[in-house]
Amino acid sequence: MRVNVTINGESRQADDVWEGESLLYVLRERLGLPGSKNACEQGECGSCTVYLDEVPVCSCLVAAGQVEGREVRTVEGLAEGDKLDRVQQSFVDAGAVQCGFCTPGLVVAAHDLLNRVENPADEEIREALAGNLCRCTGYEKILDAVRLAATRGETA
Image (cartoon, rainbow, N blue to C red; front, side, top):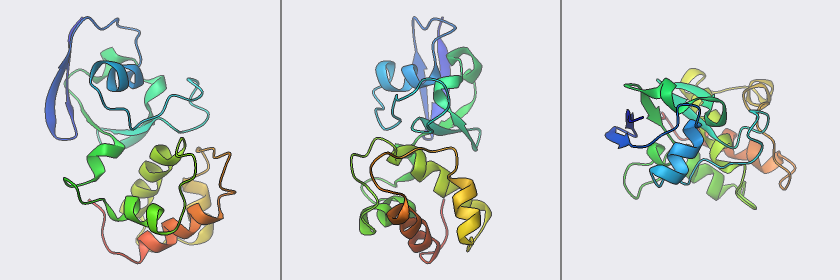
């Protein structure tokens, strides 16, 4: 089947998609957007989190056929050209990136939180990031990055 979807503000088309294929597979393998990571394929780790119609979802759990005519925004779509979004830049500046496998999902989750809550308390940050697993950082630098991003103004 053919899937027509808007990704990061651009109309895209993927052909020969099996209807049970995941959005994650389509993004990475068919459309060349490797930002979202394939880790658990069960919606448990959050590494593949993207926005679907401005709602964060685990793209490994979304069938490609479900995105027909909808809008998807990936971690790549948060940046404006070469300028990183404030959340992305804060992860870099705070040293919250180690192996980087969990980073895309954490960035999208933090971005969503900061769109909803201007200056979140630590408990709100932890709750917002609870669906994302990291095996490298110990989370403190990640919390620092979200706090830093909160001081840097609005997200898009």
